[in-house]
Image 1 (cartoon, one colour):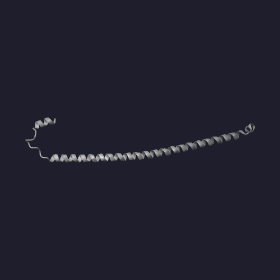
Image 2 (image 1 turned 90 degrees about the vertical axis):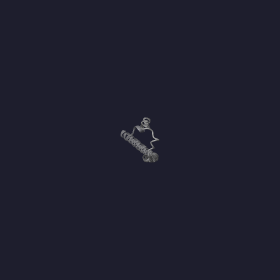
Image 3 (image 1 turned 180 degrees about the vertical axis):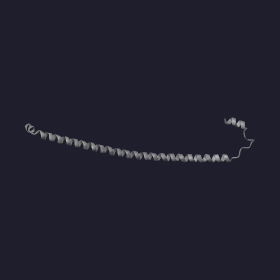
Image 4 (image 1 turned 45 degrees about the vertical axis):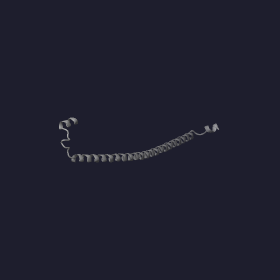
Length: 108
């Protein structure tokens, strides 16, 4: 059997080795292409999930900010009402008022 293997011409051995190497390289390239494709599909899935999560979080935050804005507008309207009432109010009678100098000292 050994003599039969040794009787194979060298060019046939070289061709067989070249075919084996090319087949291995093609298989490796196919494996890497499939692996890269799977990684890209995984990345797209992760991107989609993150985008949906951020959208939900943004919606909740916008709702909270809108509630805060409504509360601030309500407080502002109440304060404006108090300011208008104070502007229309009649001054206190002179007998009830503090002297100007004492009032200035208290306000310092």
